Length: 238
Ligand code: AP5
Image (cartoon, rainbow, N blue to C red; front, side):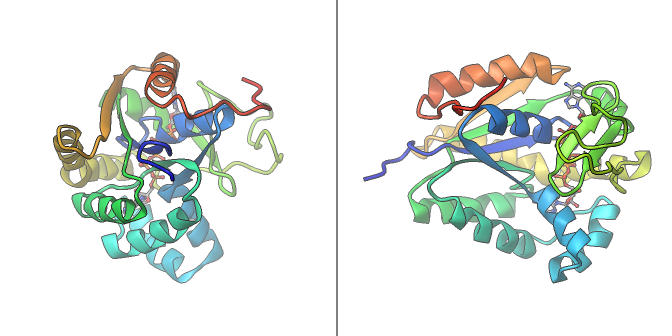
């Protein structure tokens, strides 16, 4: 049967703007992994004006967090469909409550969390990036005018569709998101750190760097050494 550790269950953890989305797409492009971003999911709900979207719009725009019950519903229904895949969660869990319920859910499935990747990027580096960020809403693809600009200014590389600014990417709201991170999200690190010494075998790895180009090779080493069952995609173009 399928034993523990045969499926990658990874959390991309870090401050807003730390590069979670950027590194997740890099992993998905090269390896046989899927990624689920709760920020992208919520932005799609908002664009489609679903019930969740109506509720999320104001909260996201103000830099707050949605209630745990709503987020758990949004996430677990998706995760159940990805049971046989290696996956990354980007932007979830974001509170201790979310983390605990996620653990219960995964232990019922028999595939416990295997890796928590903590991206440690200084606040001042992040603040400088946000004003340069543009996104392609339907796919969640992220661009940065100085770091990874689109091939054609203002347009998505793959579809040619227009890029937009996120309404929560202005300095005041961003400060609020950073504050939310410190109060509600960062306590999760101690929680996962405690688990690494229990029998749950969750690996907590902190990667430090000012750029994703410093972080990327370290990340690949973690995957190769600790999760050799994760294979490169055949069509990988690097
Ligand atoms: P979400 O979309 O998850 O926002 P976030 O966590 O604030 O993260 P970001 O998307 O801002 O940043 P990122 O770390 O992915 O960085 P990126 O790769 O884009 O959530 C949005 C909102 O939804 C929340 O505020 C909340 O309201 C709600 N929400 C979501 N999940 C929730 C949950 N679980 N519970 C409750 N509410 C929830 O990179 C940032 C920029 O830097 C980009 O422009 C990028 O190109 C650039 N960049 C990346 N790497 C580099 C580099 N090495 N050098 C230079 N620039 C770089």
